[in-house]
Length: 431
Image (cartoon, rainbow, N blue to C red; front, side, top):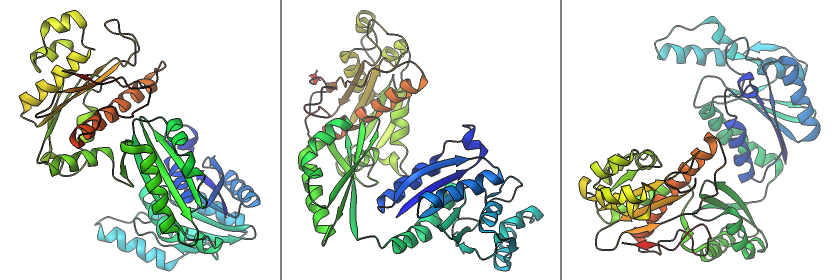
């Protein structure tokens, strides 16, 4: 089964909106072994949408479009689908009733233009939208089906998961497969792939690598007579080859893992942040109920605040500057003691664009102070960032991952290096 994606909207062409729908659809289809042959972006112009649909069916077995199903004059996808099919638009009484009922239930007045969302190409099949007002549409053209979905992400997700993906699987006669995504921290994508070469060679097993800053997700897919058993075998090999760099699976993000480990130990954490400016604290407050294990943060961006708020030795700061392993250690111990937490996590570094205190851009120190053991300090080796805000943001995001992963390792009693044998990391420094 080959599918072509057509995302519609001037805002996508102009860069005002990032095309997250295409990325989500690509991942979702790949999980079902549906090949995306091309992804096209077109503006809010009728003829261009029509041509994109026709071209897509010339190359693929089906086309999926997103966007252009709203009530305004620039929402032209339903009109384009009707023109591609050579039919007119008709008002669907059931859709009109649903629209009127939804608007009335919300205590609003129905605007006449909203009824456009009840117009469908003659002969089209509506796709139930459990999350919103505009239904999806499907028209079977000579070259294959065209699925037309709303551009609102959560509405598109609902229709795709509940209707479109099951239909595509049935149309394609796809074999039964089993999948699992494992999450790693601290390893390069190339290092992960090299270590997993034996798994790549297993019959019926395919791997996909999904890199993020300082993290790589590994999606394992198994197909065969007993895909579940094969998946279990492949997952076991992945965990064996990657070791404790694997921190979780599926939606088990690093912050959730840390919260779970803290809760299991009846422990709490606090953060002292310079380089990251509060991003670690933001990550640790993302999960509902996080206040049970995260107490708070001190964002000591200015050098003087590291002494006044965290108790970092003033002479040390004067002699070495703010970016130094001993500074990181004292920051972690200071925030632990001042906030009354079980564990203190600290980061300091140079995000750029200029060197600081004689240390180059990309220098990072991460420290975790816990009860009953020496404070651990590591110096991760992220890629040297280039100029611009994007590189600075990537370095800060990587530092968040380094910090949370070091805390995870301390909680589990693991070697403090995020990835043994990875050249990005120095040996720990203990104080």
